[in-house]
Amino acid sequence: MSPVTLDRAATHLVDGWASGYLGVPDPERRLLDAAARCIARWGIRKTTLDDVAREAGVSRATAYRVFPGGKDRVVAAVFAHEVGRCFHALDADLRAAGTLEDLLVVGLSAALGLAADHPVLGAVLAHEPELVLPHFAFHQLDRVLAVADALCRPHLTRFLPEGEIRPAAELLARVVLTYGFRPGWLDHRDPASIRRLVRTYLLPALGPRTDPSPQEIR
Image (cartoon, rainbow, N blue to C red; front, side, top):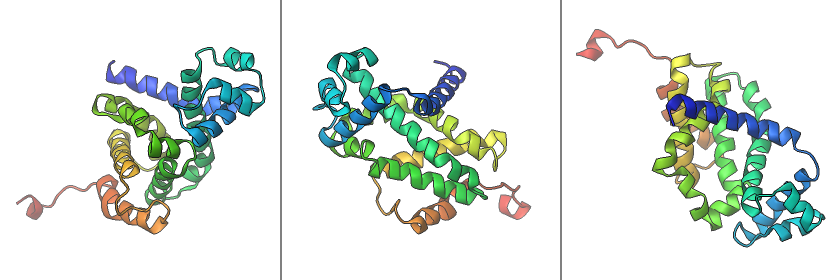
């Protein structure tokens, strides 16, 4: 897949997350919410479509009619729905950020918190990481970075010139992947910790660039 095609596919995917969350009808929404509770409780492997139907209070036939692809289709829909829910909730805070620093603090805090604290994503990463990590492996990285660009672009465009948005989005995605899977010293629940990362390392890399002086060149 060419880079342009990949970027278009990523933009379409991200748009679908948002519209899918906002527009999903009943009983699909009930089934998705029930599936999220089941996965958080038992994990992906142990959750069956029958479990989801019982949790949602619908018949097995209804569950298979709404999700003809079976459990795999439900799991994919749950993750898309939950990510769409989080992006929708976060959008107003991102738009309210008045500086690049505030934008990065809000976005990174939310993204890292999503990996650690979300009842579904956090549970899967903690107990079934082998089902998730391959999607972020080296051979999938181009797709991950294209999605990051589609997510970040509407907000970064307020603070960065066009040519710097994609590199900035890729840098932020790599930071989230690194600290999301292995937090180390960074505490996503501590805004001061996130702000220190942003001020010390990210703003110098993403902020306005100046031409070096003749002394610096020498």
